[in-house]
Image (cartoon, rainbow, N blue to C red; front, side, top):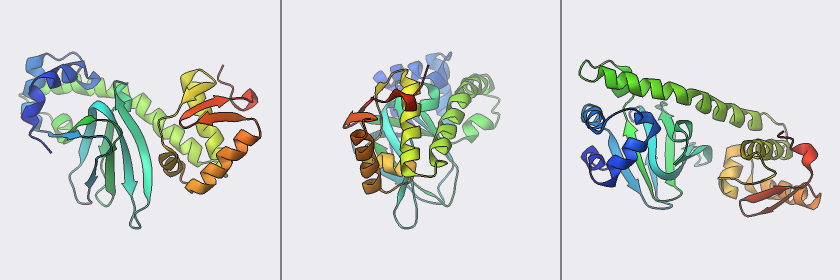
Length: 235
């Protein structure tokens, strides 16, 4: 982790200024907030990962550049994908919360990425020196809650399906609706998709193959095309 002062240098300030969390703040207000918040700052290379062990501090993670995958890791080493986060994107697609002391988290960079790890108290505990700045950031954060809730709801909707086929069809339906198209890309690798749906990768591949053989879908890597639209009405 790097010193947060690096955030105030060069193009990083441009990234911060464009970040929805800091919308409406001047460069001076951003610098003042970072001075009081003293966040951890990370730069990750593609496929590089970091592990946050149990007992660590509560954190709000913010992706200011690139894309990362956030997973939890259980005692056996099995991973569960929580989300794929990216910037540019909506605020709801850029932040995550680490708030469980007995959980191991793993953050993997899908591309070159930059992250800021904030202590929630920097936003939630009133500081008279920056209270107006905190208020502006909290207003921005509130706008993201609908998106965050939607993402959690979509995940639970997929997991609630009884079969692997059902989970996969529901996931693809949601992605089709989000893209407003019967042809779209998904942000997850096969391994990550299996983890997201909490299924065995081999079983997932078998279900994908069956759906393709039945003429319901076509796919090549992460690009999908829906052939039988009765399963995927987004209008």
